[in-house]
Image (cartoon, rainbow, N blue to C red; front, side, top):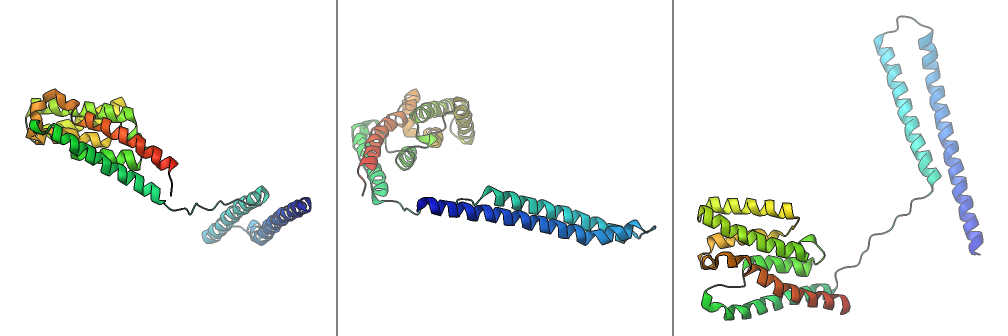
Length: 245
C-alpha cells in the first residue's frame, strides 16, 4: 500500500513538472509571436520616430524579464515542493522560570549574609554589578558573558583599571570616562566580553567606602562575589535540567 502511494505521489510530481515546463514554453512562444509584428514593421521602415524605437525597446526588455521570471518558476517546479517546518509553539515551563528566580534570591541571601561578616570594614558584597551578573548567569547561562573566563578576566581587569584611573585623575568625569574607555579596550583585546564588569570602575570612583581597598578592589567584592554566584549557578543549572514541571 505504501509503495502504491509513493508511486502515485511520484507520478503526480512528475506530471506537475511536465505541465510547468509546457506552460513556460507556451508563454515564451506567445511572447515571441506578440513582438514579431512589431519587429517586422519596424524593420521595413526608415526614419522611425524616437517614441516608436523607445516603445520597441521597452517591449523587448519586458519580454526578457518575463522570460527570466518564467525560467525561475520552471526551475522551482522542477526542484519539487518545498518542505515547510512549522515553528515550535511550546511556551516557557514553570521550572524555567522558577529555578533561575530562586537562584537569584539565594544568591542575594548568601551575599547579604556575607555582608554581615565584612560590615566592620564598611564595604558590601551586594553591589549593583553583581545583580547584573546574576541575571546573566541564571537567565542566559550559555551566553558569552556567562563564560567563566570572560567573567573573571573582565571583573579583575576592569576593577583594577578603576583603581588606576582614580589614582591618575582623581574623582570626577575624567576618571570615569578614562576608566570606561579603558575597560572596553581591555575586554576587546583580551576577548573577555562581560558587560557587567564595566560598571565596577564607576562604582569605585564614586564610592568613597571602597577607596581604602586600593588594589584589593580588583578581587573584592567583584571577583569574590562571582565565585559565590558561579557555585549557585551550577546548582540552578542542574535543577533546571533534571527537575522539570
